Length: 177
Image (cartoon, rainbow, N blue to C red; front, side, top):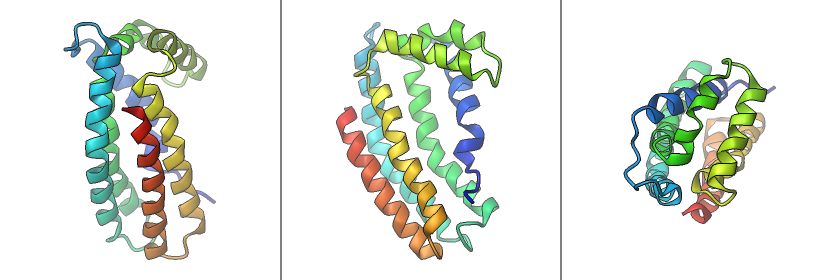
C-alpha cells in the first residue's frame, strides 16, 4: 500500500496559498507579458530542479527504508523547495495574479472551485504556458516515484528507481522552456 507523501499532504493548500500571498505582492517584472514571465520562472526551475533532487536523494540515503516515513518526509521537503520556489515565481505572473479573487473564494477543500479557478487560469495563459507544461510533467515524476515506493525491495533499489524517475521528469521539463 502506498504511503502518503509530503507532497500529497501539502500540495493543494501550498499551491493556492502561495498564489494568494504572492499575487498580492505584484512580482511581475515582465510588464504584463504572461508568457515571458512564466518562461523565466520555468528556466529558473529547470536549472534548480537537479540540485533539489540531489539534495533529496542524498538525504534519503540516510533513511533506513522507503517506509521510514519521518525521515522520507523530511527529505521530500528538500525536493519540494524547488516546486515552492517555482510556484512563488509563477504567482507573480499576470495570469496567476488574475486568479487571485477566484482562489480566495474557494473553501480549503473545495475541489470544484479549485478546478474552476484552474480553468480560468488556463483560459488566460493558454494550453502552451510553461506553468501548464511543468504541471503536466509532474505525474511523470510523482507517479513513477509512487511506483518505486511500491516495488523497491530496499533503499538502494528505491534510490536507483528515483534517479530513473527524475531523468524522465527532466526530459519532459525540457519541452517547457
